[in-house]
Image (cartoon, rainbow, N blue to C red; front, side, top):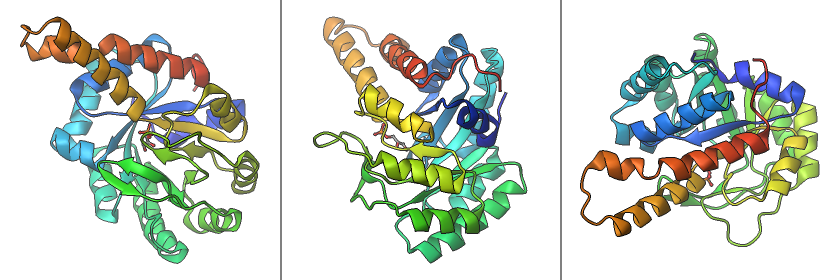
Length: 284
Ligand code: 13P
C-alpha cells in the first residue's frame, strides 16, 4: 500500500525508531528494496531524486513502476514514494500530480525568507492532495546527483520559525552530515538535534546516512531522527558485487544475470539497516 510520510513517521516518533529511506535508481533496485522490507515486515521509504527520475523516464514511469511492483510482488508493508531533494516548486508539483505520496522541497541554499516562501507553496499544494512535505534547513554538504556543495549548519531559531511558518511534516536540519563519503569522522551536534526535535515537535530526517557508525546512528535516533536517507552505501555494495561477478564470469552477457548479481549484497545492507533502525514489526 502506498502511504504518505506522516502515516509512517508519526508512529516512529512515538516509539523512538526510524524508517529507512533508500534511494532507487532502476527497476531492480526498487524490487530488491521492496522485497527485503516486506520480508522483514518494515515500512519503507523509496526516495527518487530528480536525477534518478529523469534517468528512469519521468515521474509517471516511476510511480507506475512502484505501484505495479507493490501489486505484483504482493507487498503488504506501508511504502512511501518520496521525491528526494526536489529543487523547484514545479518538480514537486509534477511528482505530486504523478502520484508520489511525499516530496522534499530543497530550497536550503536560499535565504530563510525565500526558503519559507517556496516551501509554503509546496506545502499548500501537497497537503490539499494528502501528500506530505519534507524540507531542509541549513545545508547538507557533499555530492549528490553529481552536484557538490558545502555544509552550512542549521540554527535552532531558524528551525522553529521555519516549521511554524511552513507547516511541513518532517524537517531535515543540517547538523554535520554530508552526501556521499565522509572525509574523516562525521561529527554531529546531538544536543542541538534534541532541542530542534523538542521545539519543533516534528520527526527529524538525517541525510547522508552512508558512513555513519552504528553508535552514532542510534544516538541520532534517540535524539529525534525518525528517517535516515541511504544511497551511496547501496551503490557501493551493488557495484562491488557486480565488479566481482564480471571478473569471475567474463563470458556472461545477459543483463538480467549481471544486474541481479548485486541482489544479495544489496539485500544484506538493507536488512542490516532495517534491524539497526528497529523498524520491523511495528503497527502502522
Ligand atoms: P548518502 O548517499 O550519503 O547515503 O546520502 C543519501 C541521501 O541523503 C539522500 O538524500
